[in-house]
Length: 148
Image (cartoon, rainbow, N blue to C red; front, side):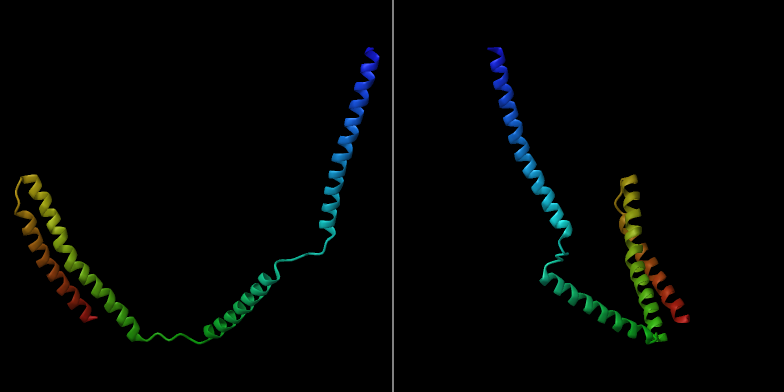
């Protein structure tokens, strides 16, 4: 009886192995065929609409490059007036920072002195002194710029 059970089990195992071979073998074969078709297929490219838009963008880029090359050949002229304007702008901003910065700086120093001594007058005195020094410095900067 043991031989009979053993034979039946062997037949069942053989049958299962055959089914697995057929199933997985077919799937493997299908996968290999699909891979081969993909390898041998002509290049399908990108979406035609996308390709059309890309080619249009490329042509626009070429046109823009050509225009920029032509513009680059024209010499750029900077007048002395432009340089003077920029210098004036720089001096004006420096004066503005001086007029604002000196009173603020001296007021902050006055606050530290007030806190250290327990008083309240040095912040105001510092702001007034900073304003006077800031205006003096601004006038000095203007005079120096006019001499140039």
